[in-house]
Amino acid sequence: MTTTTTTTAAPKATTAQSLTLTDLVKTYMAKGRESFAAVKGINLDIAPGELIALLGPSGCGKTTTLRMIAGLETVTSGSIKIGDREISQLPASKRGIGVGFESYALYPPMSVRENLLYGLKARKVKGAEEMVSSISTRLEMDDLMDLRPAGLSSGQKQRVALARALVRNPPVLLLDEPLSHLDASARQRVRRELKVLQREFGYTTIVVTHDQVEALSLADRLAVMDAGVVQQFGTPDEVFDDPANLFVAQFVGEPQINVVHGVARSDGGRVRVEIGSDAGSLETTVTGVADGTEVAVGIRPQDATMSAAHGTGLHTTVAYFEHLLEFGLATTTVAGVEEGIVVQTPAQERYEPEQKVVIGAPPERVYLFDTDTGERLR
Ligand SMILES: Nc1ncnc2c1ncn2[C@@H]1O[C@H](COP(=O)(O)OP(=O)(O)OP(=O)(O)O)[C@@H](O)[C@H]1O
Ligand SMILES: [Mg+2]
Image (cartoon, rainbow, N blue to C red; front, side):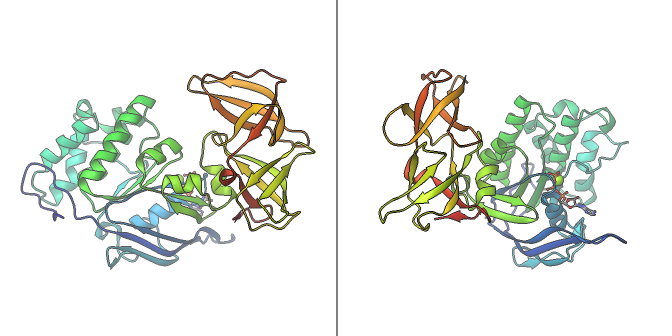
């Protein structure tokens, strides 16, 4: 590993540091109003140089978490460490964290170049100009360098904010929706470049995003949050293939997982779940359910298969069929089930409305969840 030196022209990698959040809590207190727990005890162990994506619905506490790490918000309780250093009580400027928040102001009278150089010059960083021009080229913003912030579009401002966080070469980088205002193609290119820069420089990084594709393409691991709590922290494959609960199963995956009511049937052998009224059943590898238990059954559209209307499985009728070039999506109706079951079908197959089909799924991909708590049954 190299240490941060600033004597040569080429930007140097920082010494990668771990970031550890332990029982981190934020409760907002407002005069005359009830206190509000925005973050309810988060634990995350992020390895040096790792990039994690924080995913979750609006209001679940993502920005609050980043602001606490950055020192822009006080911590109600818990600990934040970079390496072995406790930083939760340090002022923001002493934490050595690069922040790319949308609301992070640029200085209006200065050009983009001056904005990017500003912090570096104040700290007398050698090679600052080279660092700035290298990053601006890689983020495709050379043509913006002499403009003033007021003249920039929101996507351009976003790239400047990202560049400003990167040029500081911080051991820890926090990015809150860094690419949300870019158009689709710029977004893809800047995303790729961000990942390459992150790898090269070894910033330990948290990216908040609403975009699953972005999360999956950038992240080593995903932290899926809901209501101030991390519901699951794992690699994209772990989160997709082995969801901890119904919330995670429904939040991650496109098209969304099918969830229907079912009743477990166990006669000592493999467990089957009956779905609908006399529509049939699916086998599952779940063992921890008693005969007759009511469950929520989760089947990903990608895991479900359709075949001609005989044999064991779930007997359904195609309601409509969409052909989407790389694959098809069949929405089927099951007698006695309110929700349709969506099946992703191979590109070459075609289905017609009213067609009778039988749905199957590999038993290990038929997930069961507790109907009250949403916890996964295994
Ligand atoms: N200063 C504040 N005072 C009181 N409540 C706040 C304050 N800041 C945020 N909250 C509340 O805390 C909760 C979490 O907010 P936060 O901004 O962290 O959500 P988020 O996950 O970033 O959402 P989004 O995806 O919409 O950006 C929200 O319910 C919000 O209303
Ligand atoms: Mg937010």
